[in-house]
Length: 498
Image (tube, helix red, strand yellow):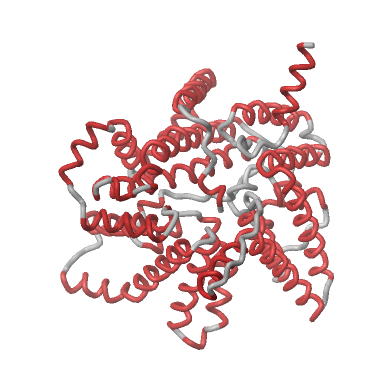
């Protein structure tokens, strides 16, 4: 009887539960992943069996995230696999037609699930209609896997890579569990060759992978979740209940929360994938150290920004090259407006993307005049000037994040108004005294982020060189700390909504 009850509980755990997704920081994932590592090791010499196991686990992982929508993912993978082969075999007009049909199909899939109700809302407000919104679940990771599909079709069309003929290899690229829900948006020409290689894993790779998983857990659970639940969410739900200084601190806290949440996921994804023999694209490089908005986008969500640059900005700019500098201006603005739309179906996301586009254009147009001005004034590009540039850039990014975080334009306006008209800096000591953990996390989080890169490398190298028993103790301690920090239910990653 007890065995039957245990099997019943196990079966329940394996079922889809919308309130309990399978995320990296859950104990169920830890248990499943340890089993996967064992099976992956046992099947290392049989490539077909190994890929099949990884593929089955990826399907299970996505099923636990989205339930029956896993069928949509599999259908999308099959369609893109077939179209890729068709593009390679096609000639002339038929090749182009198949390519554009493939891209259109992916964009339609993304548009229908993510933007249908957004367009209905626009139609209702502009045409004074009362069209009812469509009830639907947005498939998790749809923004990521459709962009992955489009880049694959483009590369096959450009003949920079051959279409993948092995259906298992392609499916693993398309739905690999480590990056299916939140990226990075890996390129097929980088990932697929790794699928075909023999499984290799040395001690150095294991050490780096464990280091990344520990770092990701602490970023996500200890910093991001705590700041979000205990401070950021409360302020952004009702900004007028708080003074300007509290709204300002909440904005800074959100910048840190978003970075720790998303980069924490990326760290864990890179670590998990590495233990299975795969190297995913890097996605973050201390973005708030950027000295300009352009540099920020070379450091933040690198797989997305490079995707936009390679497959949208450059072709668009090339098509308008006769316009000279104006082609850059138009291409930048359109690219980042689309970037905003990609992140979410809401006018606040559109404005956030357009704002980044405007800031990038301003930076591009004023680069040479600023350099001439610095030379005329005798200002050298020293550390003082770099700190000033970083300070300005970081605050511009943070104030743009307010649009990104606020659930409506009205709430974003309230946050801005509180900061600029009701600051009350004298509240700061009271805030620190009343919420010492929040204040400490903000200070410590930013302090660590702005430490020199050589310090980060030193810590990583130190961890790699530590004896295996000590590594185990550090990992156990990190798991204990994150377990203690989980004072509430596990929080899904912020980028799940995108």
